[in-house]
Image 1 (cartoon, helix red, strand yellow):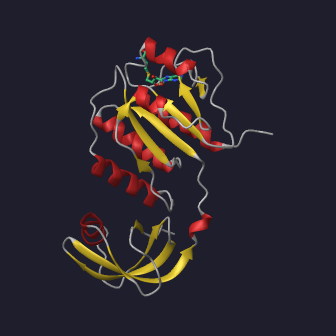
Image 2: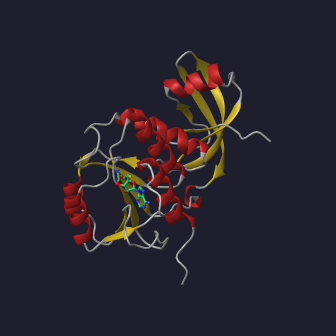
Length: 238
Ligand code: SAH
């Protein structure tokens, strides 16, 4: 059976409500999926859960849904308490990291500026659109929060001490990342790796746990995906 179309909408979802969609969602429904008014889809957000809806109006660049019945309560979402910190990469690699981190369930994404990272800026609207599409595809109800880029030293200075920060460090004598209960984050360096001073700084923090992802040197985006996969796959055995 083909998967039903799921769209994210921030508006309040309740039976009888008419909810506007974004212009790109209207384009997707009309021009890509070739749907028309009356077609049935699903719509969701973290606050109200997932609802069956019908396309109420659809024309170029504008669409609205009529909300019908609840499909899934907001409390049914099972997300690990997992964040991702990653050094800014080239655009394509950054896009991939945002998409995969969303599929792998991260709640928040922190781009950081390091000595060898590329650029200092992100296009937040673009990355949010990528995260939204990944949430729609992966049956999430929530979207990950994407923070503004900040220097690594600022991030570490403001780090919440109760959240362990698993640092992916190549060629390190360290165990692989251990999945576990409780607040966790993964940090991955840029293509050029962390600078020696950054590695010293990381290792000196009480909340940092160095981790290996195996004997080969992975691209940063691969390291992010693999590290998150290990951290969200299974709880730490008792
Ligand atoms: N240019 C560096 C490699 C950087 S790889 C060099 O040749 O030494 C980019 C990032 O991916 C690293 O900063 C690290 O966070 C992560 N990474 C890559 N391979 C890894 C591995 N085998 N174990 C742990 N982390 C790894």
